[in-house]
Length: 127
Image (cartoon, rainbow, N blue to C red; front, side, top):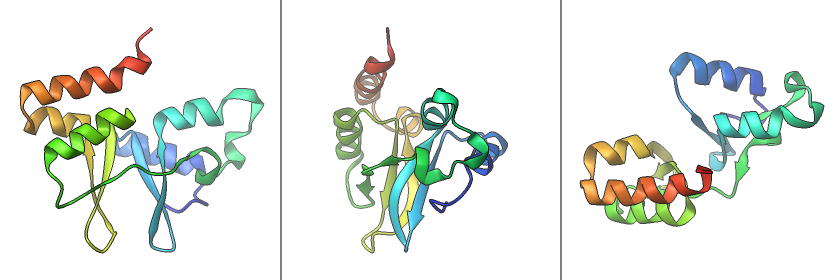
């Protein structure tokens, strides 16, 4: 997704494909991530007109990512440390090749590791 993509288009894509995060790229580089939470918390408050906003206006910058040659344990620990539920995966050429989600981890990692991750990333949202 381009940083100049209207957020209305991004929201429609998220709804259509039932996804909660979309990577944002520019000049063949990953520059941000836009999540459903970003749309709600950054686009709607303060009377901003969502029809005029672009991805760059609401995306999270400073992307946390893992590499294809990292172990699942390393990726899980990175997700825990950064408190993220989705982690872009890049190859040796720094190209986005996939997205690792909390759901992926729960299906493919040990129950102990999955439980640690769920506890770590859920804690800031529990009140």
